[in-house]
Length: 351
Ligand SMILES: Cc1cc2nc3c(=O)[nH]c(=O)nc-3n(C[C@H](O)[C@H](O)[C@H](O)COP(=O)(O)O)c2cc1C
Image (cartoon, helix red, strand yellow):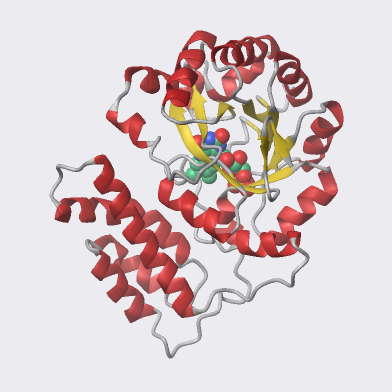
């Protein structure tokens, strides 16, 4: 699987996820077998002005090649300048967000609003590709604005003609947000209409879903989004399936605990790099707070999870997290995911 000059070992990628796909979570997912992971969406205006919050999104592990930064703005020239700043900071692939449904973003003409008009998509891709020659430019779109404007095939074709190196399609309209079913048939339609790689997204909750999406749509790669939240092990299953190996058993309680606590430690290191002058106690407190959503996801559908989540608001230190895990997930208790639990029943949709 290739995008521009890059060859990927696998076809299962971590999707861009605002507030989630930061350096620590990307590292965990890549370690588990994700072939590639995007940053969360980053404001091109913020990149141009070098705001501290924006620059924190560009923290990366040197082994992230290509470092794929997703940017958003409405105007082609702002996207182009943002892309130049991202590349100067190490980006080796620039993805343009034309999928975000949030009112504030769409209200400014960015995100999903940009893809209402294929001509605007052409202008955006052309401007960015010209500004960062040699760096592949990709786009992420939805199926359309609403049921009355389902234009993903035209938009993907416009992007290809303008020089995009790949197109990712979330199979929902902007009006759908994250509800309803994703239209995988439209992922297949886009795949049939362009010759650049097509990355499918939407309703990939389990490894079986990801394999089925590839088989049903013919897409070149699959983006795992909410299905990876609390379950980076999904990439281990997918890597095994790709290699023709049997599915690995789910993590043991000990392996799960080790990963969760390592995630906490990585978050603290990540924050400490952004705020070197901050007292360490404050860095730890804020990191644990930031990580709370992940802790809620990690404990979904497990015996002890409800009690853990009830008390999670009180967590302050990494040691608190370890103690609460040991209280509610003791080593001598069964650790399997509850029968009947499905991640879609209890998904975070807080973009
Ligand atoms: C919390 C959250 C944050 C997201 N952030 C982004 C983002 O920054 N950029 C983007 O292109 N899509 C973003 N998405 C959309 C996902 O990448 C993905 O396309 C969508 O969730 C559909 O996949 P799923 O149904 O398998 O979750 C986000 C989704 C969620 C739930």
